[in-house]
Image 1: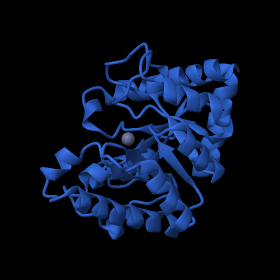
Image 2: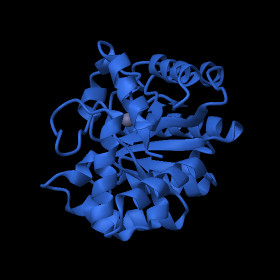
Image 3: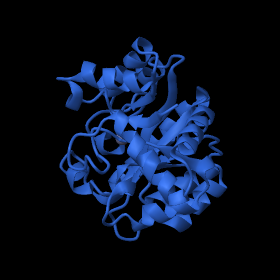
Length: 267
Ligand SMILES: [Zn+2]
């Protein structure tokens, strides 16, 4: 079964035609995991999962939003039900530091410390409820490497199930992530014609058993829809690209992606 393991149908980008987007997913008989980025969108993701059979949810406060609102563990705890399958997205974002500095943070160090604090709180919630963790990372500050920083924390805290969603690091770190039993999330950029060498190399080299396919919609539309709003059905283009790179069939990729998602999220 086709699955988009990282979607944001809970975002405003779908407010005008949500029903049509849902119908297109249903026609494809696919599954979708909607990911929260703030409390409001986490709640919406959890509500959707209750309403629609094919939807699952993850709840969390995205690292770019930690100065917009306070992370309250108990409020998130109260959102958890059977179809909430993960905590996140959470992690480190050094790409949007200028934006976060306008929200009350005073320095990059303060941002990094706060992101770490909130990341650890998410980790605790995931452990407490025996749920997977969805890690968001984005580099952008000289001398800091978010993916290895997150990996060290996961190892230290003995996190068992996690995905490095929309992976943007290099192959060496990807291999370490995989060695530790975690997943690499691959998105639309793997289909791009330019600046896609590293992620294509990663998709080729790392085992299929450690990959998840995602859209991160409404963002990051794959070719041939690049530049337009993304949606879950387009995750098939990511699967097709991985099949091409690994020289295997698209069906094999889609089936393994479903098995991987079932294993990570216990669905
Ligand atoms: Zn996302």
